[in-house]
Length: 174
Length: 243
Image 1 (tube, chains in turn orange, red):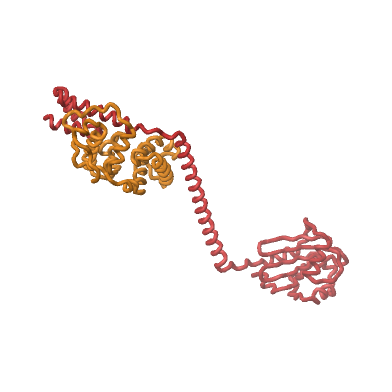
Image 2: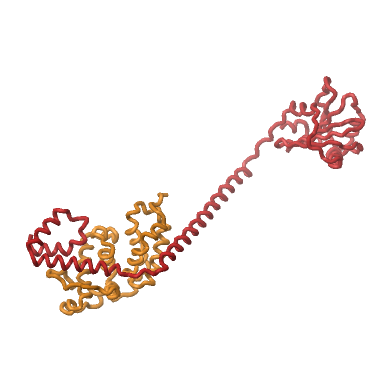
């Protein structure tokens, strides 16, 4: 068996805040996020020997959280996703976002399908590159770029009311 | 570079930190320096990125989460150690069962032979026992092993274990001064009597022979010393003793 790159206690202390925040953004509910985080660390303890590079610990933990989330089928329980078919990247400067209410941001994320929500979280929260997101989600790079472009435009519309009023409301259902 | 291309690139820019080269950035920056519209777009997108990044991280952490997580991994570690211990125990038990099975089920080794010279040499020696038993112990042994009714009080007694062979020496002083060695193994049970040659009493031997013992013969008369040896086989034969 491979020698672990670091101890599980070190992984907890170093990354638990990021893991929890990622879980909250992904699951949308703090209670679910706490369960996800605990279960993720339990699995991380079990599979710690698979972590060969301590520098990759954070994306490794994130991938465990996401897999647990998908496995639980939580994103399917909610249903009624918004459509991103009609959103476009801006060609002119978007209305300025002076401040964003975290709860409003969370609601906007909750209304997105997981395949759009996860790249947005990784992109803004973890400063991941397109390549990192593609690796973690195991999708082509072009897919990530497309989903992010549409996801960013969607957030812009949701979080800037004036802009949303000008471009029309987001319709429910895919 | 056309503004349309630059705007497209600006929308992709934040996620390309590991793909764009310094040259790509330089080309883009040159265009932005000379194009107000694109520069404003770049600044707005950068600002938007920073605001959303901050908002995305703005999640309060439960104060007891760190402790809970440490408890979770500690419990997982205890469970892991317990499972590992159980597995180790199971492996050890399996190995022990295999070893036991091999040892029990395989054909037993042949009883190591006893060197007749060894027996004779012992019989000729006159030890001073170092672990005396009580006279009652020795007397009981005499009566049970030899069955003698000779009322000779035992004074000294000693017992040795030599693997498969047990040797018992006891000596009692009386009118005949009879030291006795007993040898036992899986096949036989022999009594070696050392008799004072000068007090050799055929009647005494006859009294031994009168019981169930089967006298297999005098091993050696030992003409040079004061003793001679007599082997009484209570079970098997002298040949069995050598197997």
